[in-house]
Length: 245
Image (cartoon, rainbow, N blue to C red; front, top):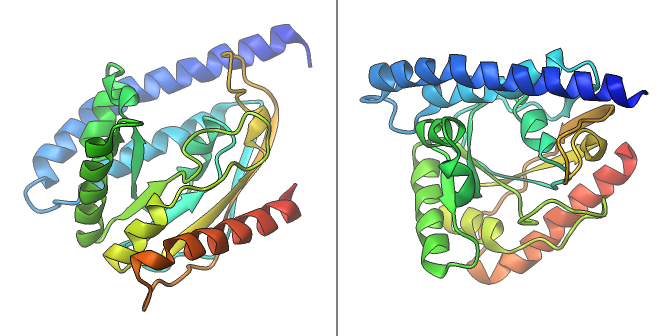
């Protein structure tokens, strides 16, 4: 693949993303005005924001994305959804799943003009790394979202892996699931590492897949069981990822 073709395809894909943002921003505002009074979980207004990932991937000549695995029959059954994290493109890939989730994301992203505003409109949840009160506030917001029958999406590694190997998982997502009394829904992402490297703007060829695993129940667990639940879910993801490589 020539560098010229890669550059042109990348520029085209970034242009598509920008156009999607500009078109869908007023749509989300309108939906919030219309549905806000009775859709406190912002399920409806959040869906168009996730369409961006579907459109960008479909129109990117370098990417082929697909979703497989367990079908979630009730989109309003709340889960704490967790996934490994290879690339920024993971967000676009996971957005192909046909239900709405609120994403726990670093606060810096919410300050990006228009895109960050859309995250706020969608009801996504900011967290400032290394700030204890911010983490506690974010967890309480996650619990409120779950009570409104909307799932929460968390990358328990906390950041993208620079080596392709999974990083250690943090306990927060699993403690949240136990305290909220909801199952953990593991996702496995594979193939996005070449889609958009951690540094640089140029995209690369990628055949990527997000696989939905069976939910892991939390009934009968206490916060003291969070570490064991974390290990169990990480092992499930790592084992499934090995079959997708």
